[in-house]
Amino acid sequence: MTYRSVTILATVRLTGRTDFALRAALELASGDDHLVRTDDLAERQGISSAYLSAILADLRRAGIVRARRGPEGGWSLARPAEQISLADVIRAIDGALTDVAGTRPENLHYAGPAAGLQPVLVALRAAERQILESVSLADVVTEHFPARVRRLIDNPDAWH
Image (cartoon, rainbow, N blue to C red; front, side):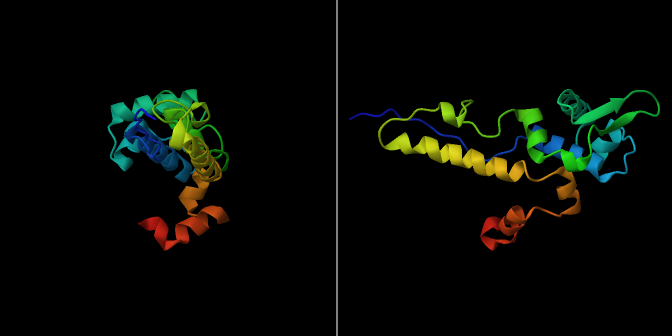
């Protein structure tokens, strides 16, 4: 029997753009509802202001942040930090949480010995969702995580 070789890339990996989006959202979440200028956000996190502007525009279109123009303008969260999950921010920038070369796990089809890979990838996505959807921006800012996430963090094996 001959099987064609398929490279699978379903690692949990954040793009630089998503990392910057999370960091900007967390800066806004850590404030006291004051508007923050793009340049200030960029400086605090060491991100190019022009690049961050495009990221903030994506977050605005997704309803995560809002902008006010003018000399007293800036950015703020569109909802309370407790109501914005890490998954919300990631999806606003990258779309689906887990895919393999642009294909969602439920749409993958493998043959032969690889047939059991699809359910594992679906389970990976479910586990990723359970964590990222249960952790809010406020949780990260205060470092007060849901019990399930805290158990994972406290496991020394998680850090290696």
